[in-house]
Length: 127
Image (cartoon, rainbow, N blue to C red; front, top):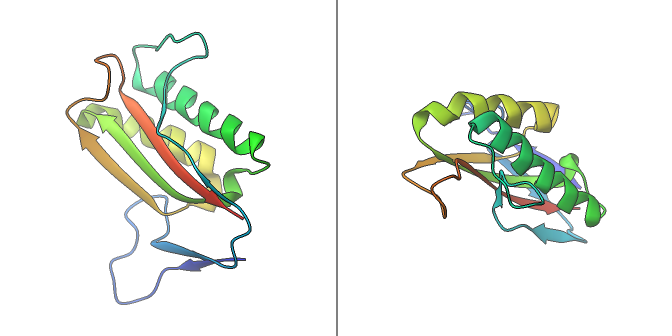
């Protein structure tokens, strides 16, 4: 059972997310490592949109392997290199999560683990 926690008295969410989600009782918890915009062959496209799509495709593959889907996501943290990466990433994020809008933190960083990486998506899912 999941219940959205978005009380009055605080600023509304600034984008496609809810402030919190209460999940009880949890029968399965999946914690993913940060997923990069990297293809199965190890290649990484140079643009943020393609990397965001690949990162989310990797997340979806992992969720599927665990018998879960987007509706089971209870937290997303996105790490993006450079402010110019925000708009392309957000478009992909919203497309993938749709109306679900899990709690989400977006962090702009100077770099990720390799100079070619622009996007990393960290997800926790529960059911």
